[in-house]
Image 1 (cartoon, rainbow, N blue to C red):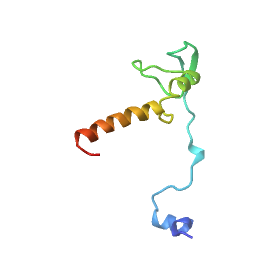
Image 2: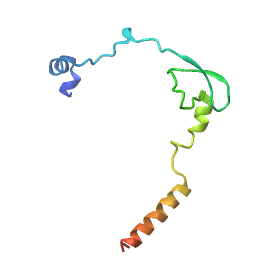
Image 3: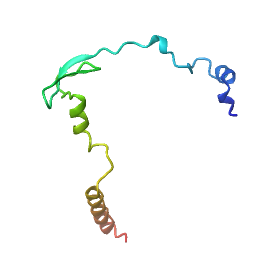
Image 4: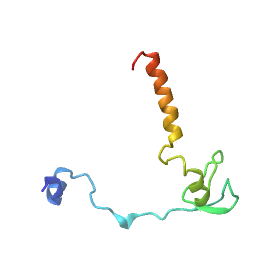
Length: 94
């Protein structure tokens, strides 16, 4: 057993830290009504939007960012490999 798994040891070692979630003091999230920048539907977001940035409903946000965080495509790998080949050739590395 790790000494930090023991609550008494952990609390003596780190007296200023809070290790248990304090769910009693959670604030209500203030929702703001907005119009989706993509489809024009009214929706709510848990923040106050900045007028210079677009705001999307859940559906449009999911569609918009679907490709942004997904795994790279073969096309992406081919582009990277071509660039690496050029760099290796320029540095005379084979």
